[in-house]
Length: 84
Image 1 (cartoon, rainbow, N blue to C red):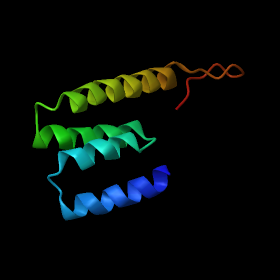
Image 2 (cartoon, rainbow, N blue to C red):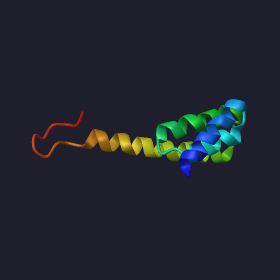
Image 3 (cartoon, rainbow, N blue to C red):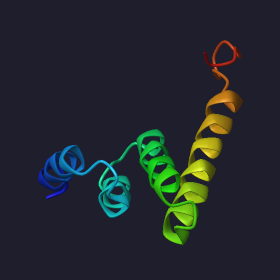
């Protein structure tokens, strides 16, 4: 249950905001890549050597870039205008 996991992890991070493991787990229970990146940035602030956070950060940054490129490249097939 991702929703319950997220709720419990958010409570845990309130109690221990320097717990890199909790931030790492939070990045795994969100569907929002921007949110995941922010959690992983927090992990890397706490521990710049956390390899899992580095890997996850690169992964989600790639997803964000891909999404933004797809949005920028879309044109309306009827009026041929660029999406806003």
